[in-house]
Length: 126
Image 1: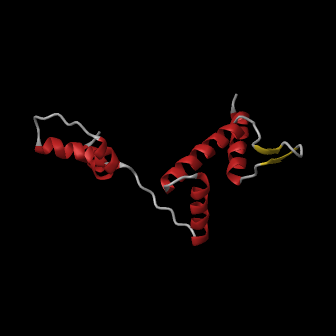
Image 2 (image 1 turned 180 degrees about the horizontal axis):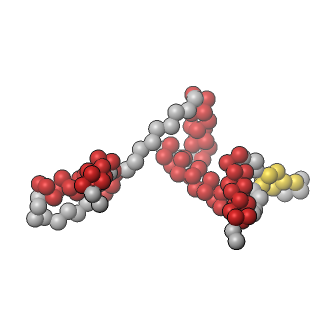
Image 3 (image 1 turned 90 degrees about the vertical axis):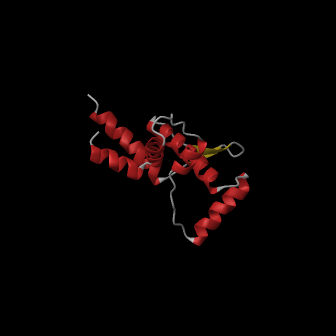
């Protein structure tokens, strides 16, 4: 790693910066990062949503017993990752009405894109 690359790393990665500072101040001591360094170094994102979408998110949190938006996003991400894996494996995601004997396929552009990319990669394979 060049000096310029290392300096760029220190500017963008707090944990690396903290370790460098520690060694600068305590050159003979061993750096032992704790949970607090990871907490401070955690990446944060900001999502801009309309007041209506915010109300929908809060209603979902209430219905699901989720107390933080972080937990809601983590759960939503887990579900989306699962759904993408399913369509990439050629499966259909659907809601089944057992009483009526009918089903309704989940239609989402993001899943159609993921399924299409699966087909592209299958055609490209030798």
